[in-house]
Amino acid sequence: MSVEDNPVGWDGSAAADAYRHRDMRLAEQLIFPAVLRRLAGRAGPGRLALDVGCGTGAVAMRLAEAGEWAVQALDPSADMLGVARSDRPHPRVSYRLFDGRNLDWLGDGSVDAAVCCLVYCTDPDDGRLAGLTAEIRRVLRPGAPYLLADLNPAATGVAFSTVRHGEPKAVYGDGDTVPTLLRLRDGTTMTGATYYRSLDRYRSFLTEAGFPAPTVDLPTLPADGAAEESPAETRTAPYMILTTHA
Image (tube, rainbow, N blue to C red; front, side, top):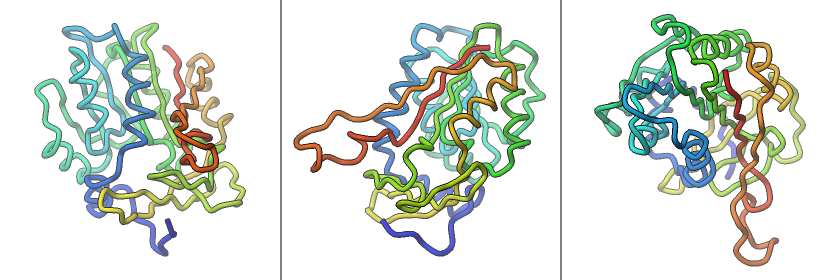
């Protein structure tokens, strides 16, 4: 994978088209099953789950298919939502445009679970993310889970099979812009800009919003063969999954 000069913005039609064709193998193997396991047994008629920053709807669809959740899938990109509505319609999923911060149509304690996958890393604005985290805390029922999955900040520069966030050997600090390469299904790549934040910064987003300190999971794939011949995702976690509760 090689970095392109002009990263694609996450909120435009070019990013939505690229995400439609993104190679999702690692997310499907490492993020989605972990999210569904942590929500197992919580779904039921009338139970509401939020997919915050739903993109093209991959997580929202799996939530709806895995249980009886009613899912509100939210994104600030009309283009992403257009792809989601076209490619992943479901009778229990409603796709909604929002500003990336406010959930003001939802009452206090009205939501039974919330997930947010690969979203914080795409937003440069700490204030907006702090506001969003506080809003998620407000709308969750007492004891309801919040699952935040994102790029592993300890894995910058590692060339995984489908993603590389950051240049090899580069050192990043909180708020730095990080070029991130995503593999598409046809073998080509797109480059987007993500924003580095340390694990401590992620924890502080949650605790400052009133959540307990999260548990942190760093899933990897099992190695098949000699370690030096196995893909990087068998040795280093591309993603992290933070779990906390209201």
